[in-house]
Image 1 (cartoon, rainbow, N blue to C red):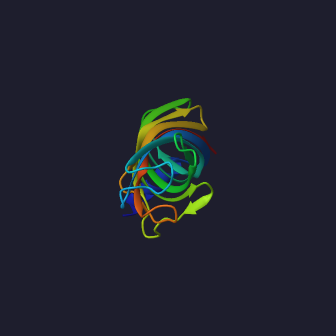
Image 2 (image 1 turned 135 degrees about the vertical axis):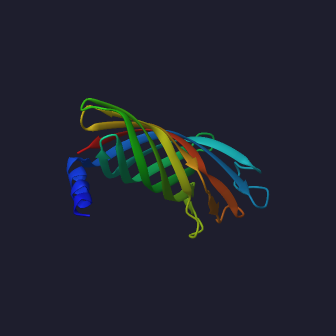
Image 3 (image 1 turned 90 degrees about the vertical axis):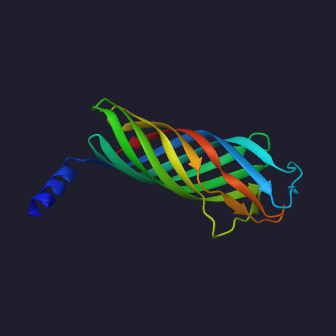
Length: 192
């Protein structure tokens, strides 16, 4: 048992760990459906599919053990639909990712990441808040490529895949469902 503890402590001592902050941008694809069959908002009728852009920031902690690593972080996003610019979304997500580095040197690294996240979203229509049922938080998976550039920079290219969506209950429409957006993102992280 002492040997296992010593090996574990030695592994952690050689691990690369650090706090990071970053920014990201992306493209969202979302879908919604009103239970009454029609959105009462003037721009929506029946089933809708919309796309939009998003920008945001993230901060967290990464622990790298050579070719393997894990990270956990908070991500803040602002999104706006392209065709319906009156809808705005503010997201706060907590993510946990596993990292596998195929190439890992001081100057360059290439790997894959896969993870899971849970989020909270505030949806707004012309600055009126659309209330979200409090017992329904979206759950999503994350997959992508990660590139380490020099010693302190990481670039991620990936997708956020919906597992569950949001149910909305608001003043401008009947109750309706909106699915967590499929989101393609590029992010830059600076590791301290």
